View 1 (cartoon, rainbow, N blue to C red):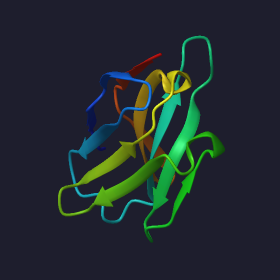
View 2: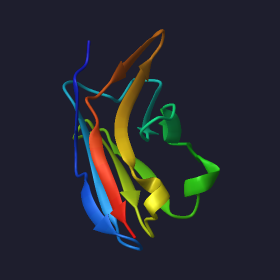
View 3: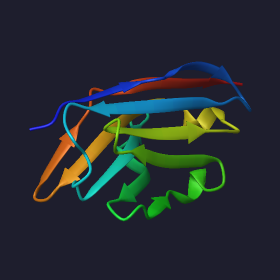
View 4: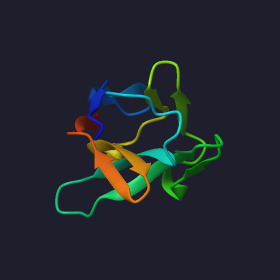
Length: 115
């Protein structure tokens, strides 16, 4: 088991920046991957960014060039740096850990981008 606690969400204006953090309750150095997903009202939960154990990251097309995912294994934490935010980025953002065959989720943090 691993518990995930997200933080860093909030209200920001269009063009602004936020950094989300996800702290794991134990070591993440050997998990398969960590990622961020988001879910807007009435929509499905979609992948935003994912980073695997080798440090390779992939992003949704809608956030490429604006968002950066990173992980700090010494702090058991994964980050999502979000720049040039747009109203369509408004959603609840969820942290995810893949430890085959299991997946763990955080409780989510709200990000609201005002126009």
